[in-house]
Every structure is written in C-alpha cells, then in structure tokens.
Image 1 (cartoon, helix red, strand yellow):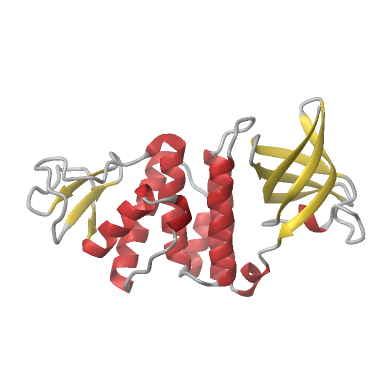
Image 2: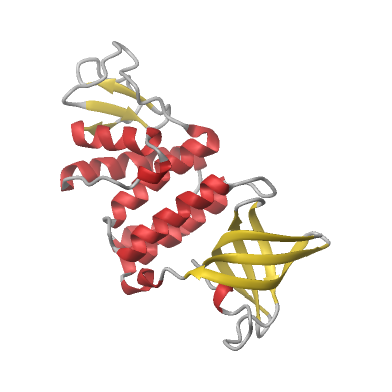
Length: 247
C-alpha cells in the first residue's frame, strides 16, 4: 500500500549504521513508525525531512507491519528550538505526550495542527515555554477524550470567584466559597489562571496560544495542566523528568 501523508517527526532512533527509524504524527494515520534507509547520511535525499521536529510530506509504502519512507520533503524545520534548552525540552516532552495520547491508523489532523502551532511558538520564542506547554497539554488531553468541566463550580454553579480550586483527578472546579473534599488534592487558581484554563480547552485552535499571563497566574496554570496530565496518563515520562531539571 502506498500513501502520502503530512506529518511531524516526533522521535528518531538509529537503525544500523546509516538508517533511521522515525515516529511520525501524521494527518491521516495518526502516529506511525517508518523506516528511512540511509537517512543518517547527510547526502541522503531523506536526511533533512526525517530529523526530529521536522514538519513535511512523506511518501510511504507498507511492507508487512511497518512503513518505509520512499520520498520526503521538509516544509518547516523549527530551527529555533535548538537555541534554548528549555524550549527544546518542552518540545521533546510534547512529542512524547503526543505518542502517548494519539492512536495510530486514525485521522489526526487536529493533533497535527496543535503540534505545528506549539512547535512554531516555541521555535520563534513568541510565547513563554511554560505557557505553550500548559495550553498544549490541556488541549491535547481534551482532544483525546479527557476534556475537563471548567464551566462552573460543581457545587453552587458559580462561574467566577477570586479563588477557584481545580481537581486534577476529576477535571472539575470548585469556588473558594464551596471548597473541596478531603483527599482531592486541588490546585488553587486565581482569575487569570482560571481564564487561561478555560481558554486552553474551549478556544478556537487557531487562537489557542493567543494570550499571556503574569508570573503567578502562569505558575498556577502550569501546575494545574501538568497535574491533570499526570492524572490521566498515569505513567512517568522521561522527557518531563528532564524538563523539571531545567525549570
């Protein structure tokens, strides 16, 4: 079976002395693994387009249970990622999170759009890395079927309050007046962080990263998004552990 896909290379590993084994987020087939012969050689026709973080088009043919990259063409290299270790670390983490959440052999154009936007903002340094990370986490989890209920306090129905509690395990919020139950381990959110949480889940994808936050609100937003992520994937991610050493 031959097919042409658009995609982002999420991970690259060496196969033999000169070949590459790529994990690619594609528009039509979700996350797939594909083999690129000789791609480690800089003179190879597929060398540039099979590097990590590259967005491009890939002509594939299937042999048994794996894909082979026949031709490829890069469209975006996101070179700015390698200028800052924190931005690079966030990009690595989002790639690993994508591999955890996005299924294979299913359409994934929306996930691809999300990752393209996240990598662009990180590469161009137009948004703080923690803001991109948190917004991408919340949107990706929502797309994967874990959308939280951020509309109103689960107890009294209040939409706004100076203090809101976000409960990562349930994805619900409670206002400061109602409080939370014992053992729920909430994250405190001020008005700015609460607005960011709602925006990251409900806003149009094209406007997902179109906001900024003060430092305190950003820290609350980042803490809530990461806690929610870890409560759903229930495993340790090596890239997240490394990212924590950079923060």
